[in-house]
Length: 202
Image 1: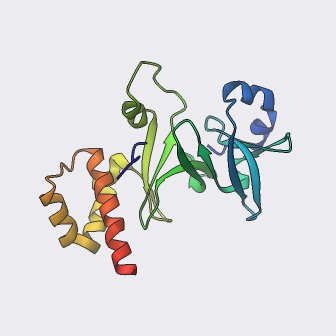
Image 2: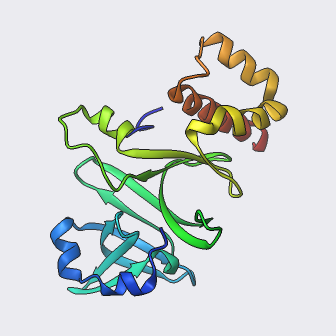
């Protein structure tokens, strides 16, 4: 299991943010593909700005911004970390119950996916890469219906998995002496559950 740890802002606000300002914040371009909400696929150079939940696409030196509500998903090759990154824009509800689209990175894909959202305010202290991966993101499990923050995994998700795969998961937890109070354990259980689902599907 490698690289496990490796708000729909209003349209008015998004359009008021200049391209120059955004590029000053994050000026790295990555080759990738963007799938719009109408399933149109655009290929070019991408910049993802997590603080504004939007993507800038550059094709033939012409740039255009796409807020989250216009996006289904996008992916690009991150040369710095030598990894292909995939992101999805999901429909969620804010604290007031209003619908909005929010962009999440897909860390693990499966029947139960592991997603993460980069925090807007991150620590500037010197830390290891692993520590940054843990502290600078909020992680979620997602099954195409429910998006659950991983800190609530034991209470809200694990009981459902145990109903479906109780004997196998219990054996896995006992054999690996997993501590159910540690978030890293939840990722291992999620990954193993996905392996079990693949076996059934095949």
